[in-house]
Length: 271
Length: 320
Image 1 (cartoon, rainbow over the protein chains, first blue to last red):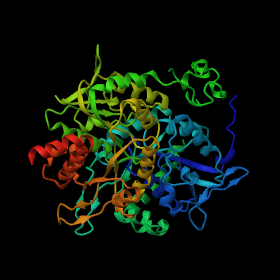
Image 2 (tube, rainbow over the protein chains, first blue to last red):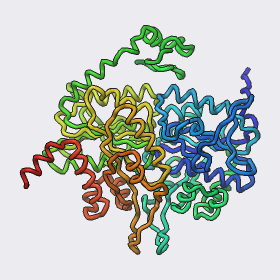
Image 3 (cartoon, chains in turn purple, cyan):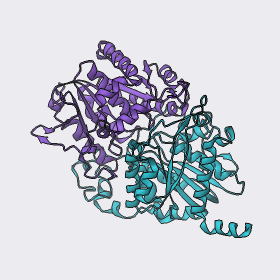
Image 4 (cartoon, rainbow over the protein chains, first blue to last red):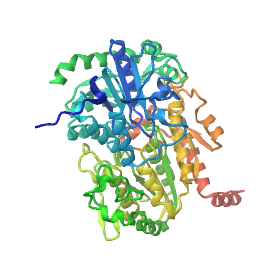
């Protein structure tokens, strides 16, 4: 007889999406944040779990850096980043006293914290939990996939940039998904072209074609391309309210389309 | 060491061999005896091996995707332009080994000989080693936990037959974890000249890079300096400059000033760089007059001066 998974803190979370890439710096954290905002825009209640222990970027992106994390009887209370309390966030960034302090931990210690993050955050009722990961296919990734397995995550959104060097790493991530039994929701190509603000000429700074090629190679859906938007980067860093700024960005229609594709594919993904 | 349990407290920890997760681990007795706390004999073996290597440079960043591998590869190409300089490039990014592709060596395999593993040579004076050469398919994933990655790094440092080398460059993955601790520990007795830290201009990178600098200081690794990559983009059509990754908090310049670390240089974004890396060719050959090439060359010179200050002085005296 199969033991039922303890419901615990993830019982109220309807769907879990992991955002992965083999490659660093392709925009996993940015896409995780943008996806959460796009889903929120579609009326969903979302949470973001940032398990990048060495480089926790999301608190800064959502102007939540330095916020205190409280404990309740069910565990840690996630930080709400909007007034309506419909976007919540948990990150190791909140646990660091000094933001310049490096988390210099070996694998076993990282695994232990990730397990805690998965089971001990009191998320409450959520439509979507977006899990942002560090680059690679190592301790953090194995730990989070194992810890989430009883809760049957929807799958992984795999992020790449257009160039072959990224695709080279990200195809290994797709193998990781296959080996660990994690369904691939689709591939997103980030930093896909830059429109010069002076003359509107579009330049493919990081080459082109990688995202679609990767999706084809692996036989998974290509969800879309997201262009480079320095103004959004600036907003992310200068403390603007992203829920207001994001809809004005050229990246917004791309993320909306990606979010809608995920919502449309839900029945197929759940079967 | 054989496979360790998932909750392994670490062979050097006080709980080694005594924790609940140690039950049933093949290494339990070894750890409980305190042997794990003894210095790894490999450290001395690596010190011996490194006697034929004059300068060792680590290329680090806290942040992913800032151009560590691109920089390491081009630092190697730049140094190797002098045929009399022997250069070795070691890629310790076990999960995402980009160096074979960037150096045009995809599909190459390594050979074992009596004196150890042979690196793969791009030129007579430029040898490369990466886990990428040990994988039989581009789809193979290296899904290893920390201890196994550390074992690989130890092997790379101890068992590769580099020969006589002027510069050993070590390309690292992003972060401050197993790989970084291991390479610093294993090279502890062999003296590392220093680390070059790569960043991009925006605060989200600098945030992670400050942690990396913090790490360097903690492990007493000298910092040669910081390189700001992807620093500005010149539109090929209208030639006006844009900041794709805006330096919202003053960029690397402000950070270096605050932390009193040299800024070695700023490299602008040139779409040719990405293309060259994808093709596995040196960007210096593809675009010799690009502002990015000129920036790289100036940075490489400063690194050489750091490593051999006396030599640079002598050369200046001779030419004056």
